[in-house]
Amino acid sequence: MQTNNLPTVELETKPDFNRCMERIYAWYEGEVLDRPPVRFYGHNADFESAAQADRGWGSLKQRWFDAQFQVDAFEAGLDGAPLLGETFPVFWPNLGPEVYAAFFGMQLHYGETTSWATHMIDDLAMIDDLAIDWDNEYLRGIDAITDEALARCGRRFLVGYTDLHPGIDCAASLRGSAQLCLDFYDNPDRAKQLFEVAVRDFEAVYNHFDSKLKSHGQLSVSWKHVPSFGRMHIPTADFSSLISPEQFREFCLPVHAREIQTMDHNVYHVDGPQVARHLDHLLELDGIQAYQWVQGVGENYPIMQWVDIIRKIRSRGKSLIIDLALEDLEPFMQEFRPEGFFLWVGTADETEQHEVLRRLKQWT
Image (cartoon, rainbow, N blue to C red):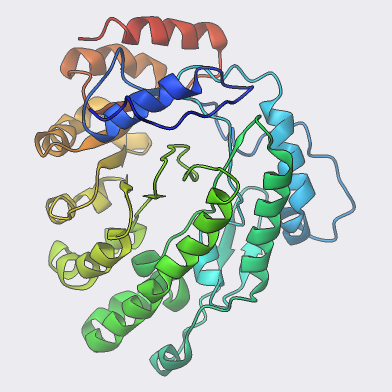
């Protein structure tokens, strides 16, 4: 395990940060140090804050684009937070999960805690003129929020990059998921061209934000709050829940291969059982160190019904992020060994967090 020569970072809010990063790097390699890493969170924690007072915005969109407010809201939530385990103080600029597609000129609509898109490719002939607009309001908005956070972070928190979904999910946002499914049958060559356009400039966009952050001494980290001293990316393809494994292999797998090729660490977001049907193909991809298994709620809960999927991923030497309710911790620990697991445990209670840490140190 390469954990002895990691750079050191001094954070006033997280004095054990460097030891925590040693655990993260052991986890990237499918190993464990003294205990597995664990992140604690409360429900909707990224959106709850004491800084929600009305500042005279004319619309919700204006609130989302208010860089000072975004950082104020984060700092209000950071004050007094225990930050136990591998719960890192990470601010990541957020204009919604489809913001990468909006860099092409697509419009987003804003609610209280998320945004959604109106697709813009009604005619596949439009693909020929489709390109990232580097003066786009959304790209400039992310830059402004990032710059505000970098000016204020000091040694109190990390600044990450925004939620980037190039390739498959970007194409679905631009075209509309239902229409893109039809394109697979009616115009498969054009569908592949759209995927190509949707991933073509990803490295340049990533480099734009990564260079800005690295020039200020920041790590690579985003909405998962999993840092890397190198280049970390979160591949995902929620759209793939609508297509067959054969279609995924033909249309999507080559796009993913391009998306992950320049990264040091890739943590693939497997969003539920419908995406997991492509797991055999995903496990063929070189360069993915870890998978986040998101089992969902309702009939997909509890976690223990997905033991076979978890075992399959671990059998290939890949690490996992597992989202656990507090009551799931003991049965999970009885079923598995600790190597290669990063647990996200849903409790904001500090006493419960200390008890989880105590229990994890006994996990063998």
